Length: 268
Length: 326
Ligand SMILES: Cc1cc2nc3c(=O)[nH]c(=O)nc-3n(C[C@H](O)[C@H](O)[C@H](O)COP(=O)(O)OP(=O)(O)OC[C@H]3O[C@@H](n4cnc5c(N)ncnc54)[C@H](O)[C@@H]3O)c2cc1C
Ligand SMILES: Nc1ncnc2c1ncn2[C@@H]1O[C@H](COP(=O)(O)O)[C@@H](O)[C@H]1O
Image 1 (cartoon, rainbow over the protein chains, first blue to last red):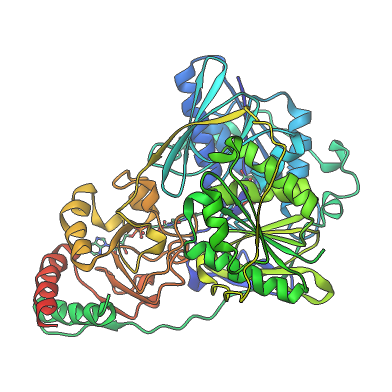
Image 2: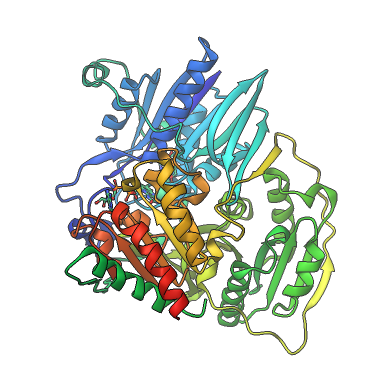
């Protein structure tokens, strides 16, 4: 079985709100001193794939793919250190942020070039723009079915058994490959942390590099997209001032806290 | 065509989300100079269709066997076929699992543009549909202009005002859709796993626990009795869900439930922006946290800087007493 996992490198989403700035004119976040990291849901997807391979034994191959700036190579190297089998980078040389359709077209074209896959995995959404669209759009570009919010994948006699989260619980879905899935987090797919040595060694492993032009998207994938445009980007000003309940003893403080709760829940 | 089509799943009924969706749809249709149509799909669709007809101009419903239960591919194909003949200018959906799953794909099939988790939707100059949504884990807000038609938008539907009832109800028609089941994917089992009787999204009081709770037991022994006392639903941060202490359905935030309670009590939760993204519509936020600098306090009306293990037993006693005095 061949699995392809799409990885997106993003600005570290753990940057605290007080250090976060946007460049309103370019409609992008400022990197400042923040790191670039692999989007967590992509790592959840890779972890889910790795566990599938461990359970299935030998004949499962996992390839990771990213479309991004040259720095995205670090995300792919980390994935190799987590023991993905192969990696490919499509270099984004355009201006600004490509929209979801442009991204999906590049990724779909790359997937077509890189091989035949039974399972294509993306994260449920990226922690920067949070579009939550790429998986579904790749499926449409490739004419494949798609299942979202998956947290577990098992191979069972030529079929894939997918467990996925819903608003009210979960569903079990049987899929005939090839299929696209978007992955969400659960307690079982918390990504493993690669050894430092493996990360270093991963830089010696081969990595396929492509450009959109190599994929026949010569006119710049963005122009072909024209899906949506970011008209404004800003940091909203919120004001709230917290009353820390006062009191000399714990008892007094909790009493005051309880009174505030009763106040706001009165009549419910 | 300048109509707006809203899509509803029969199983959810005419809940706050469906009502908000109709409200958003009606206002957008007004801006576009078109009508409001609704599509209701699933077993029992007709009953919901009749309710929705009080606020929509035309309601189509589909309850045929292939569509009685949600199956991703079949439902998507049906919806694409319906939109292909109705040709709406905008399609609005809620931010439930199924809507999120099919919306971008629907946009692709119709040659349109999708955007999700939106809190505003309107018409810009030049008639493009404009939406507003949180980005960067709730740290920033973006306004997007959708370039293609139709605009397929999934909304934080509960944040929108409902639509006014019409003097004359809309028409209700069974849609005859030519759908063949697409069996490449099949839902073979469905399970419910909820934090209580009611849906978290509809809860008026929520008691939520984070990583600082320390394990699954205190959710049972400390938070649950408090929730019962307050008639509250239980919820959690991602950290608590990822630790396996509580089910993923309890997760509140950017990638969890978007909730709208009167009171949200955050216990041992830092208040990361991604968590706050799920509670921006809460009327009052209060917190119990040992760290006075925890970001959660920046969003709180009131708070207490103490160990929750000391606070909760006492708090339950105080609440019982105050309740009887009240
Ligand atoms: C793309 C993305 C999406 C995400 N989506 C979500 C989401 O939907 N929902 C979500 O919640 N998170 C989400 N996160 C994760 C989020 O960034 C935080 O990591 C998470 O919310 C932290 O959970 P926490 O506050 O429970 O844990 P921690 O950050 O570990 O905080 C624990 C808190 O408990 C306090 N504490 C400890 N012991 C006690 C005690 N005895 N009494 C009182 N207080 C105590 C501490 O002071 C601390 O403030 C997402 C992250 C990313 C990158
Ligand atoms: N530039 C990219 N390169 C590789 N994968 C991507 C890229 N953008 C999005 N994805 C994948 O699509 C998922 C959802 O992203 P989004 O639709 O942008 O929220 C991510 O978790 C990735 O798996």
